[in-house]
Each structure stands twice: as structure tokens, then as C-alpha cells.
Length: 331
Ligand SMILES: NC(=O)c1ccc[n+]([C@@H]2O[C@H](COP(=O)([O-])OP(=O)(O)OC[C@H]3O[C@@H](n4cnc5c(N)ncnc54)[C@H](OP(=O)(O)O)[C@@H]3O)[C@@H](O)[C@H]2O)c1
Image (cartoon, rainbow, N blue to C red):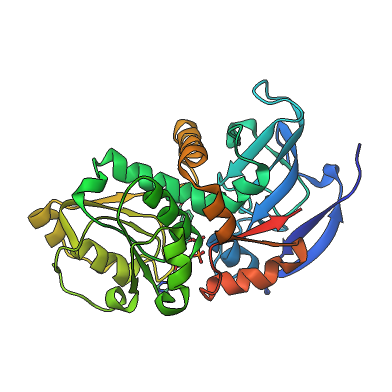
């Protein structure tokens, strides 16, 4: 019943010294309160996990903490009537891996409110190939659809294209019939990869990364941006009349040096996308859309696998923008 399991634990001295990362054996008694206990089969390394494990940004809100903002696995025990032992579930966000013990462990105990039952056709491994990055990409696509964007209106730009959000966004948009322009700092070396995912055109991020003008040539009908900062400002400034930009990330920075001109002269919409506290109905819709609209062959081609012991190395690499696609942690 109370066997030990492996976990990553991040600690920080009370006197404010640097955080340390340890690989530990814990028992279920060590877990935090919750009404559902899950045998975690897979987790992933998202950009936010990179910040949390490396300590590059104050993501962790209590110590010691088991990081890992998402996981997929099977329910072991449940006091929540919606879940039974054996059910396959996925968790994204809700402060898990930040304030509540997260996915870099073979067991998790969380609130049933935070769990989503996986669609029948999605395995726990595929769910974490998708991960929070891919689920956020789906939320971005849904935001564009709610704004009335359709494939006949023109190109959709995806920034940070070779990253997690970007890779899944390209695959989804292509499957839905959009002409996709992928913007990447690695345009030259990753062009084959990006076209394999479904990009119709690949541009170098440097076109968008500098200080631009308030209004630029109208190039795309819509965009999914995971980069923020000057890139997002230029993306908005280059969006066609009536277009929409879904903004979800800050890989270049959290600033946004933008004027109101694209909004008041071109009626452009900037749609913010949050995955962490997204309501259950929208989560379930996103996972259903991923089950229906994401090509599993393409998901497999964007996914690599690591063990728990490799998480700190990948955490550093994702912050350096060196990770391609998605990295699944096999537990
Ligand atoms: N709103 C939400 O709820 C939510 C959810 C998930 C993720 N996010 C955010 O979305 C972003 C992407 O997450 P992810 O997991 O996809 O990370 P990721 O795999 O590291 O992808 C980010 C990509 O952005 C590009 N990039 C990195 N640094 C850059 C820089 N300085 N300037 C321009 N481009 C840069 C790189 O793509 P190229 O090499 O192709 O240029 C990189 O692969 C992160 O900021 C993350 O925090 C937000």
C-alpha cells in the first residue's frame, strides 16, 4: 500500500540561498492533500518547468516542492465520484508543480476538480507528448476560431515554431486547412522538421524580433504567439485588417512594446490565452479537439523521451531554446 516511489524534490534554504534539486524516494504519506491519487505514467518538460527546476524565475511558491506542471496516469484511489481506479486522467496547471506537488514523481495526489478524463483514443504517453504546451496550442486555435478566423481568410503565423506550443499549433492548424507560416530562430536547421509538421512557409524569427513600426505590411490573418515582447508587437503590427493574434507566451520577454494603431486602424484583436486556470469545459473541449484534430504520426515525430534523471539537463536546454518539439518524461 505505502511503497516508496521516485520523485524530484526542489528545496531552498530558509536563509534564502540557492535552490537545490534532489532525486528522492518518497512514500504516499509524503504527498499533499487531495481526493484522487494517481499513478503517474508520464510527465513532460514545459518551458515553465525549465524555469522552475533551474530556479531561473520564482515559479515555485513553496519549498520543498515536487515540480512538474502536468502529468498523465491512472487513478489508484479516488474519493471523488467522477473518478474510479483505473481511469486514465490528465492534469495541466492549477498551480500543480508550483504550489502543490507535481508531475515529476511516480505518484501524485490532487483535487479531482483539477483532473480531466482522457479521451478514449489518447494514451497517457500521447497526452504528455501533447502536454501543457500542446493543450495550450489547442486553446490558442480555439481562441482564433471563436474570433471567427477561417482558413479562407489568409495565412496563420506561428512563432517559436520549433518549440512545444509552436510545433503542436502548426500540426493542428495544418490539419484544419490553414496555410501556416512558421517563424523560428532555427529556420535554417529546422525547416525540414517544420514542413513535416505542416508549415507551408518558414521564416527567420529575426524578421520579427527587432524594433518594428506601429503598422507594418499586412501579412497574416491570424497568429499563435508563444514568444511575446518585440516579436508579438511586430506580429500584431503585421496582422491583416480584422485579424486575431492569440498570445500565450513570453520566450523572448514579458514586455510588449506596442501601439494601439493595429487595434484602432485595422480592428486587430489580441486574444490572451491562459492554460493554468482555464475552466473545465474549455479544457475538456481542448482535449477532445486534440484527440480529433492532431495527427498522431506528427505528434510522434515531434516527441522525444527521457527519464526522471535527465529532467534538470532538459530544463536548462529548454530555457536556452534548444529543445525541439516536446520532451516526455517516462515515469
Ligand atoms: N499561457 C499559458 O498558459 C502557457 C502555457 C504553456 C506555455 N506558455 C508559454 O509559452 C511559451 C512557449 O512554451 P513551450 O513549452 O512551447 O517552450 P519551448 O518549447 O521552449 O518553445 C519556445 C520557443 O520559442 C522560441 N524562443 C525561445 N527563446 C526565444 C527568444 N529569446 N526570442 C525569440 N524566440 C525564442 C524558440 O523557438 P524557435 O527556436 O523555433 O525560434 C523556442 O523553441 C513559454 O513562454 C511558456 O511559458 C504559456
